[in-house]
Image (cartoon, rainbow, N blue to C red):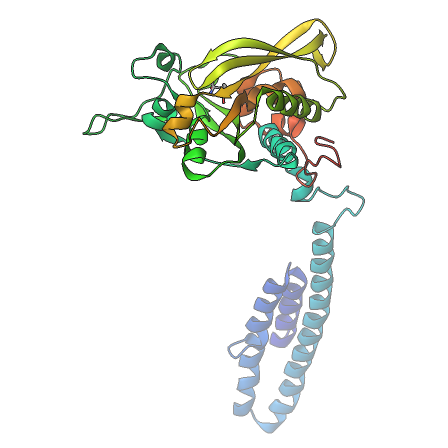
Amino acid sequence: MSDTTTLQADLLQAVAAASDEAALEAVRVGALGKKGSISALLATLGKMSPDERRTQGAAINAVKDAVTAALAERREVLRAAALDARLARETIDVTLPLRDPPAESGRIHPLSQVWDELSTIFADMGFSVAEGPDIETDDYNFTRLNFPEGHPAREMHDTFFFNPKEDGSRLLLRTHTSPVQVRTMLTQQPPIRVICPGRTYRIDSDATHTPQFHQVEGLVIDKESHLGHLKWILHEFCKAFFEVDNVNMRFRPSFFPFTEPSLEVDIQCRRDKGEIRFGEGEDWLEILGCGMVHPNVLRACDIDPEVYQGFAWGMGIDRIAMLKYGLPDLRALFEADGRWLDHYGFKPLEMPTLAGGLSS
Ligand code: DAH
């Protein structure tokens, strides 16, 4: 077998064996590139006699044509195979269900939901929202709210104190939202009508208490505001919040340093197989504390108790959220468990409104 015949057979075999386009290109360069085997043979033509050149030239060109044709054919085959493999790999199953967009799959935490519901209900009654810092002074959290130094009620608040400053004063994490009353009265002139939802802190942790919890405070100061108004507001609030036509309420005498008289409010309910129904039944559930703002508090906030009077209330947001939405364990509210939130959370685009329904 002549050299050219062997070369052609070897090259055609290499072309056939190339398993992808890169391998095929390597064969092409090895044969037809500048230093390729066919190019090397062609370079020998110059030194041959005219006769030899005629026969050898024809033979070498025949190899070149055969190899070029084989390369082109093999390239087509490999290209088609590569395309088939890619199409198989990138198959999209158009029958799969669509994944929910973020606005559909995200959930609003029940506490945020209840916070929005509260704000919606009280905004409708003409209240605005006031806020204050979580880190408070002893003065705003206690003293101006008529808790005298050394008064036992201070001890009952299980306060988180910061280390004392050089002058002996101590900052603290507010134990209730009542200091926002103080801040509001010091900066606004009556008539005042605010609610103050916010985070609160006490050293307490068990199935029904978490060290950080939430309260909403209400404050009304005007010339003739009285307990009758307070009762109406709370009654309307409970009906709207629990989404029932009637709620029976019970006002019991109580004590808070910052109100006189002070009252605690229970709502009537029936407990039935783990469910609570309001406006019926034999049970009473305490939901808030309230009263007429103590003249000492008005005075401490630069409001003349001879001219103005008013009432206030304070309520646990976590507690009313649990009651309304049947949340069995308070601690779950703080655990950031996505599965819990999927179950108990609310759709983000369904904002609570009085007209459209608070929680639908
Ligand atoms: N600050 C009270 C507490 O945390 C709750 C409270 C009771 C607030 C009566 C009030 C009120 O404004 O009038 O226990």
